[in-house]
Image (cartoon, rainbow, N blue to C red; front, side, top):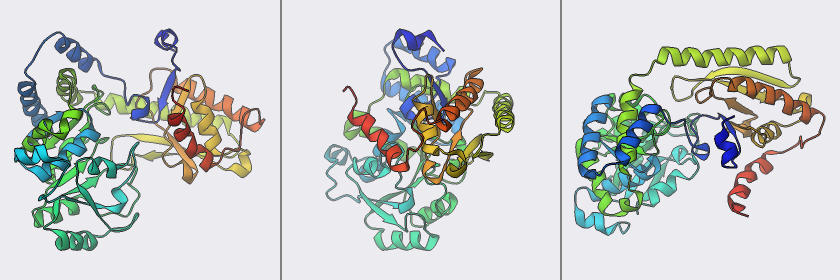
Length: 402
């Protein structure tokens, strides 16, 4: 592992969880690093730089306009705020007080998910109120449209969350969502922070879509908001109000421009081939070891990104340890191996290949074997349950600096 970890007394990490904020999201690409280094040494007019970002990024996304924010989460709050204020500066200054504004955000209940913080909190930060429809795992076009019709005079916008956190829910399709919004002239906001097929959202008519610059694109931490010019301009106005606390630096703006442009030049055939080779190695390793109680399969990304992952299942009766114990000890290992554990309560986790450095796929399997042996011999705690596992994150936050 890199001397960086030793020099700074940090735990080495191998990332098989994907693009997760908790561990730094992604490896920053060289082009974005070079871009940041260039602009660090110079003063620029931020308005001018943002205008250049708008022109260059919107050209890549095949839409009208774009703006860079401090993060996708910050961009969510600012986009909701802009739908309430429009281009009225008095309203921009007034927020989060929404008196005399249309302040309801229509969203399917199943999309009020948590991706490190609640989507609902991001909406409420703007001063807006949430109008949810359907059930946690069920909504129909009729339910969505009827809710919109009944509350049209209160609704400022509607939001759709594209995420693996809510992909299994029986929600209305994104295309139907946009069609219904257009029918009633309600602006649509698409939260697609971790999605890689950016221009597709504009092909089906999204008014505003939100992306993370620092996930698939491997740029510095920033949000990229793109879409209809009139809405993007109003989002930018929020820098004079509640957006001030979410302001973005020159280096992140410029790095985002270069990161997006670089994204469209990458050799995807080669990258996908490399990912598939890693999956083949893992499959061969697990087949040879034939761990009792461990099964596995390759699955496609649930929201359509160009990724296949290895899903691991644990049968506790056969293995004599829980899947939560396996994940926990992988993470507490040195190097720490972070798996994709969003659905671990369903008795599986996944291994993602996107952010692995050369040779790390071998370390992952070797540590996997080592920890399974310790679990089977009960040298380490083997019976961690879901409640204990869920509470570990809360304890880590509360015990920070203790």
